[in-house]
Length: 261
Image 1 (tube, rainbow, N blue to C red):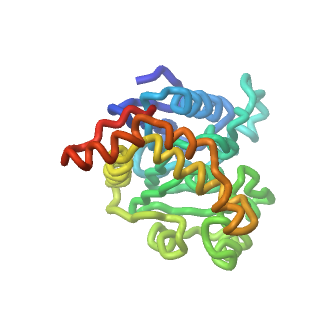
Image 2 (image 1 turned 45 degrees about the horizontal axis):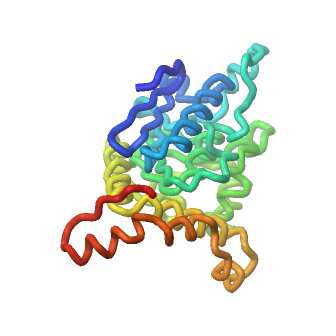
């Protein structure tokens, strides 16, 4: 357990869990909380022994209701800047190829939804609520939501959310396509751990190479160029011990022992 004031982190084997821990404020993030989230995900990115992360919110009411507007309106000066990695330490982090899962319980609004959109898999409890409501209060979703949502779901669905600021249920989120799985209330973290377990059965080298290839390819104009672009992670995978271990374990009818090297 790491020592933070506004978040909690814990490690379970290869799994790193980050919990926004301001339940009385619906897990809204102020600058100090964002700074801690940035440090936590810096820790995850730099540690070769951590292969998968889960981000969630304390309590059942909220994953995160976004930016702490009360703090912003108070006129207090932040003792720390916004991390370069963006809101929640994730929305401007473009070079993290380890997988991150969002376990969403309750409200994921504004910046909270943008944190979830910056992850790879969203597990939503039945009581989860998603929105980019910024235009309703004269703001805009500036932490990448206006770009990530229309890249992850059909444009008309994304615009239907963004141009109204309306709230979407977990079930509709799955129908639209940004929610991976819906589970009963109180079970989001448990299900996220199950998905993390499935990922951890795979080679971490292969997982990172896959994520890097997908994200690089999505930023490429055409399929042929995307297919022919070989990202650094693929070269690392092909020369790795994991690349040899997979077929060997299969031939020997045993579970592979991944080395992440």
